[in-house]
Image (cartoon, rainbow, N blue to C red; front, side, top):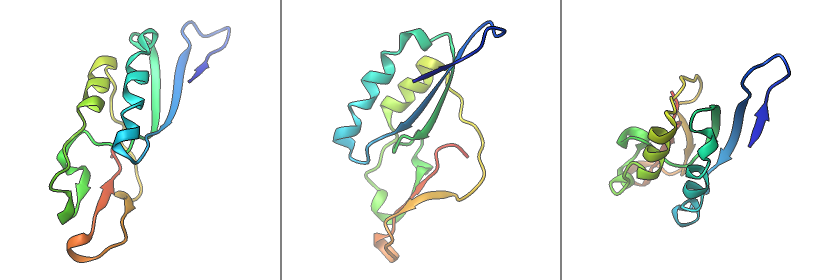
Length: 112
C-alpha cells in the first residue's frame, strides 16, 4: 500500500499493486487482508494488478472452464469499496495454457 499526496493536496490517495496467487487455496489469503482495509472505505484508492480471479463467467474462454465460477470474494471487495473497472487496451487474454482444441483455456484481462 502506498499513500500519495503533497502539502497542497487536501486528501491523499492510495495505490495498491496486487498479484493474486494462481492457486485458489493460496489466493484465499488475499481477500481478508484487503477487506480489512477499513480506512480506505471513504478514501480515493487505486487497486491495480492481476488478481487471478474474475467477476463474470465471460472471464475465461475454453472447454475446460465449465467449473469456473465468478469470485464472490472479488465481488464483495468491489461492492464494499465501490470499486470501478477501468477500460484498457491491449491483448484480450492475459494468459493461455498453450494447449489447442478441447484442452485450450485463455484467461481474460478483468478490466477491458
